Image (tube, rainbow, N blue to C red; front, top):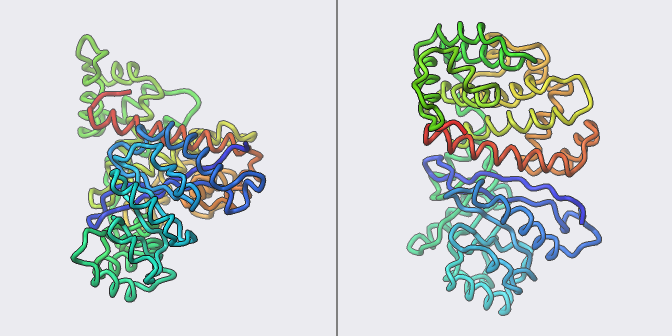
Length: 409
């Protein structure tokens, strides 16, 4: 079987906290695997990806998974744990008595059932007692029409999810209409444009990133940068001394930097860089910034060109700065001491780094056609890109888990 793409789209609650991810597969219905039955493809993909990365990448979040008709009839979802799996019934499934029987059985067994791209009709009424989530594509069904349906069912346990929320205005309107959950890209664009000065510590972090992007680390230069910023130096020493591997307290920046080494130092700086922006943004933005950085770095290592993996890391990490700081990226880049190749990729969207960043964004948005074109341009295989994405998701999960406990991984 040909290797598959998989992506995750975040699902946020009314407070813009991440409560789950829809796991998106490239499979039979899109004619990607013309020689394989869609249900077989879905089952195989679930086995390959959901089981292998489920616990490390979802954590306590829900995993929303689309299931074609026959896989529901065959009770394929019951092969997986029910605690954080949301079984999505695809919109092209017919509301037959056979399907109703399967849905009733799975719901009573503790599985969370969702209706995807729902269009209200009397044929689906018998299913509603067993449904926990109804998803409306607000590009197909207007928010106003969805609100009428939501009000009719407001006394039930059903929660409503707005799909394709592309702007902050979409989010606000859907929020006011009574939607509970939101899926889309509104949170990766500025909610408002206003000037926010780059704090001195952030400039220092960018300079640290630039140092770390060089082929060989200049520990003296790094030591000088850390010594300029009280907050950074405190975080560094706390981070290092929290490790169970440290037998004696580390008191100097040089000791700390040498102890961490390049990989863990890169992790530390990435986290601090993202955390030193602003607090009021969805947590997924911070995770996505780090994940993009790692993905771009891994892809750069596989591309046969002179692109620097360190520059690719910075390109991914800073690609959401406009959203995090509510400023146009061109304005931000003027203040950032990064290489021209990074600035060109972010501001103009041209060059190899821009193509690498494009693969990350295409993955996140499950835009398989764009991904295929970019992978052809970069001369990378499906297997390579999919492995990079899985590794980046895993790395980010490990990194943020270690950051929460204060232990370098």
